[in-house]
Structure formats: structure tokens, C-alpha cells
Length: 179
Image (cartoon, rainbow, N blue to C red; front, side):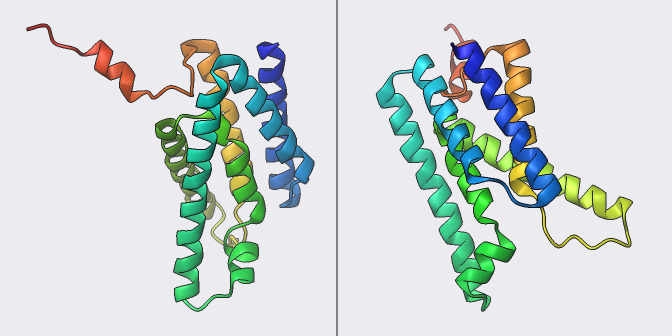
């Protein structure tokens, strides 16, 4: 069952990427399906209370980040509608919420920051490659969904790490010194 859900999650992630990169918009049912598949997938691997805790905590992180972005642009004189529609897409926020059950808080922050940096690097490289082209819209959910799909596939193929447990705890057990 988890193998089938994993396959569905990866297919949904690539579907989101395709739509966002091609059309700059994504159907809502893909995000809802992704959230449902991830929620069930993590429920099969962890206790429900742990899944609910990480969902709520990670959703809180998304809300705080979104509120800080809104506040930043409101201070700069933008209206809320312009911020959500032009600076940060609503689909990006919905994507972030849809992947919240998958990660522990530390892993969510690690994925969130790393995927934003990789996306920035991709955009900067595309600007250098296409110097005459101006970037008006960045398909953030599309790039992040490809990155997440690759993370999941590499993890499944090589590491088999449960993403709902914190990575830094592994170091605590691996690098203990015996006195």
C-alpha cells in the first residue's frame, strides 16, 4: 500500500510541475490529491498524533512565512491582492500546505530553505543563459515539486530515511563519544 501511495505522490508532484511550468497554473484537485496521498502515506508510517503534530507545526511555519512576506510587501506599499497574485502565487502557498504532513519540522525547514535556494539558482542560471529574456513569473511550486520528487526518489532508492524524523537526531546517535 505504501509503495502505491509513494508512486501516486511522485506522479502528482510531476503533474504539478508540468502544469506550473507549462501553464503557470495548477488545478486545485492536484494539491488536494497530493495532500491526501501524503497524509495517508505518513499515517501508515507514523502514529496519527505525530502526523497531526507535524502537519499543524509545519502549517504554522507556512503561515508565519506567508504573513512575513505579506507584511514586507505591504510595508513597501503593495496591496494584498498584488502580493498574492504577482509576488507569490496562491498555488505556491497551497503546495507548501499540501506537503506539510510529510516532514518533521526540521526536515520541512531544511527542504523549504534548500528548495528555495535551488530555485533561486535555477532562475539566476536561466537569466544568464537567456540574457534578453525577463523573468516575470517563477513557477515556484513547479520547481519545488520536482525537487521534492527527486528527494523522495533518491531517499527511497538509497537512504530509506523516514522524513518525519529529524535528521539531526541521527548525528546524536552516530557521533556519541564513549568516555
